Image (cartoon, rainbow, N blue to C red):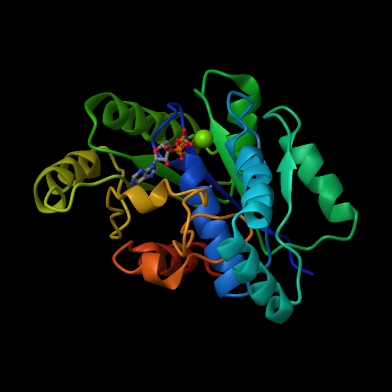
Amino acid sequence: MSDPIYVAFATQKGGVGKSTLTALVASYLHYVEGVEVAAVDCDSTQHSLNIYREHDLLVTKENPYLKKILHKFYSQFQKKPYDILLTSPADALKVTEEYMQEGNSPKVVFFDITGTINNHDIVNLIANMDYLFVPITTETGEMASSISFANNVLNRMMTTGMTIIKEMHLVWNKIGSREKPRLCEVIDRYIEKLGLDSLNTVLVKSSKFEKDGRETGNTGIFRSTMLPPDKRLLKGSNLEELVAEIRQTIKV
Ligand SMILES: Nc1ncnc2c1ncn2[C@@H]1O[C@H](COP(=O)(O)OP(=O)(O)O)[C@@H](O)[C@H]1O
Ligand SMILES: [Mg+2]
């Protein structure tokens, strides 16, 4: 069995979409494309992935529509939901290795990492990733923070050879429908001068990213750690394009 690929959505600032993108991409790979994944929640400030899973367990019991969808999906899927390991940046690598020694063999392991690269445990964790995706938005503070984070990883880690990271790309998230051709492209030209780049796929700002299954009626769920995204909500989200680009990058 080959070693799993370690992938992280990471930045130093919260609110940019790391946990959302981790859950969306992990679920799409696992439930739609049949790629075995595991997720490691090492964001000690929030533990969002773990909260998502607890929430998903609850809503798939309480919301009659989702309960039906869950039952139907798992009668065909024949596998378990992917595991979410809850840990800290200091213990994440050890916990993941132990998980593999217990006989689990995910092809891709996603790490949800928040924090500056001034923290030793976070630096060490990031240094052990194979691929890094850095969400970035056009909100001024978040944009500056993501660029500074990626720039630090590039100059203090990647170019000094202290990491096994093979590639790092920024990912535009929460973009208004008319913003891309203007602001993102201007910023892309700027970050190119720093030696950075972003994925072609741009994720729009849309309330479906925030739907959590508490809605009543036959509203499907887009982001679930236990189900594939509802096909109706997938339309226009660019999630399929994002996953395709990530698979091409990480060669899975
Ligand atoms: N593309 C998007 N459109 C709309 N809301 C989004 C989008 N991506 C993330 N969000 C929302 O933004 C908030 C922060 O996202 P989250 O994934 O928790 O960020 P982080 O993990 O970086 O702190 C959440 O409420 C999430 O639902
Ligand atoms: Mg988070």
